[in-house]
Length: 363
Image 1: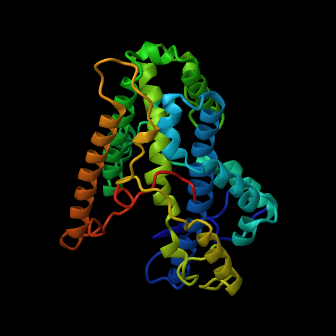
Image 2: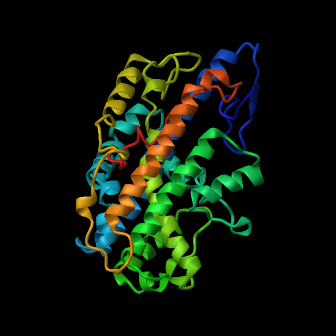
Image 3: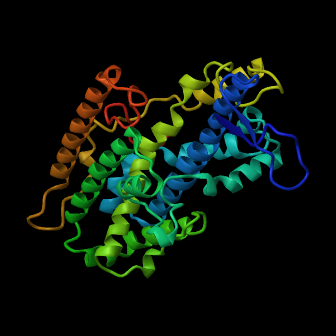
């Protein structure tokens, strides 16, 4: 069934009336079209534009630029994942967010409606920050979030299982790399540049996330605080690579406005010609190829390690690439066996495959 709170009679005040449609009902085809189209707008506006670009990428890249010197090992580490993000987010501000720009023309929002949608975006995102404090949140560790969803919400999908594996590989890379420069968690907290960046990201997240995280300055110097630092850095990496692929690569769904349209006339099951052109333009806006996560080599960015006896950054990178390759092989094997599995597991899963992921949310 489909529950639609926007399909009932309009009201000046109070909660909207929900309309429930089931297979075989007269409006079933229209309900499916409205669901697909509404989901397209939600994912594009909230999860992609706001969540990936304007929140996670913007907060982290800005903080890194403002606090980390050009030669700082963590700024160099983050460079592939922040590649071109400033330019793209600046373009998004003027071409997608500003009044009378592309987004207001693509979506069926008034200027006031678009502002309301952006204001609601932080509460609509489901990435772990929404987990309340009394349940252990907010969770910036994707693996822990996947476990939370399974145990507390009964949600257990291949998407979440693969995302937990990918996050764990990325987190190991972050932790191993930081050991090249910080002998102990206390040494990392003594780095004024690094902690200035983390405090800024944490402070900004605390003003938009439903369950505000502790400011890094308030976390005890030790294992708990160090884990938060690693989780925040890994969450940024995961968001601009895999999660950005999940919410941004929707061109296959919106290439036909009879399948999903960002706006349509009442009672119609297809978008207008203008909508088709606007959707195609929006998708072309995000179609430029970027450096690949698996197979690219950015070890030339790393500075010499400051800890004697530790693995070199290049060795950490090689192990990271090897682990990504194993995940990619597992994803390929899962996809190859899709037809042999029962519904709903009989679909391939590409968005967590390192072989197709890019290093940044640059588009």
